[in-house]
Amino acid sequence: HLNEVKGIFRYLWGTFNTCLWYTKDSGFELTGFSDADYAGCKDTFKSTFGGAQFLGEKLVSWSLKKQDCMALSTVKAEYVSLSACYAQVL
Image (tube, rainbow, N blue to C red; front, side, top):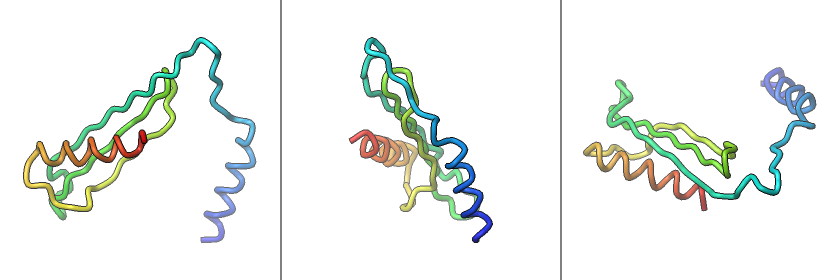
């Protein structure tokens, strides 16, 4: 794992000047999007979900993962996805 950690540090060192630039008039409206794939994992039949959060037009956060619980319907899978996206916004 040492080589992977070294690679991460090399990446961070090479990108430490990279940042998000917000102008005064860019707007600070926080918007979140989420989606779920009911029983998307063919091995465990757990749903997968993802979300993206924007501040103005800039992406500030995103996530993608398999749900910890097994949803019994598409609506429940979407609700879990929405809850995770909302928690990320807060």
